[in-house]
Amino acid sequence: MSQRSDQERQHARQVRQVAAVLVVTMLVWMGLSWAGGFYGWEPRFAFLIDFLALAAFAWALIVTFRLWRERRNN
Image 1: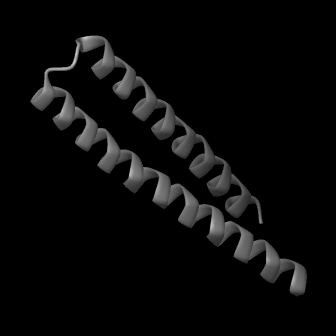
Image 2 (image 1 turned 60 degrees about the vertical axis):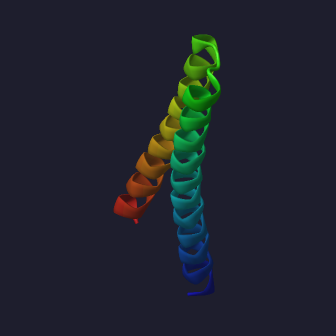
């Protein structure tokens, strides 16, 4: 029972981590996109910001899928 409880706590921690990454990514992405337009940054910086946001979203999607499969198999 203790092992299952530890596993559930670990799962919940990872879900919270994914949620935090999604929220922070959205806020930073929107903030940097606004700043880039306001200050007239070069388009290459916009592509870099977009690419980094996509990488964070891909990581969150992969981790979420892995957590879903673990939960389904248990």
